Length: 149
Image (tube, rainbow, N blue to C red):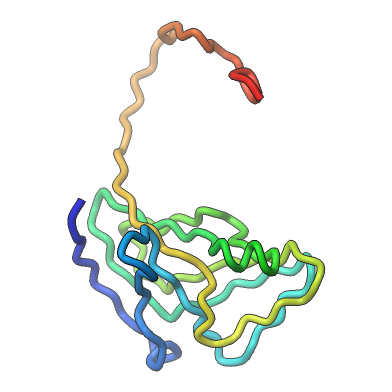
């Protein structure tokens, strides 16, 4: 897949922050930074909507997924609460990240701190075709754990 041209607007409260960037040549996600005016403390079990100061215009057929950063999860127990959060192609508001602290100590979110990743993915829309029965498979109706451990 090639490069996708995506218009981005940086809001006033993020004017001094860098645009999201890939941390390495092979990275799938761009790092999103916190555009908070003051530090936000996440108590153990606490959650907060952290602004990024960015608005984007994705083309049709593409979504952006807000995903956790593995370093925050491992070191502090902080993750994205609704992971992955979906940004639809027709959304034009500010990207916000819902963070939750699953750790045992408070975590301070500072201005410019990398808080999440943004991954762009193509998707297909479906059209329902109602039917009386579905085709048979080896798995059938087996649910959680039905294919092994």
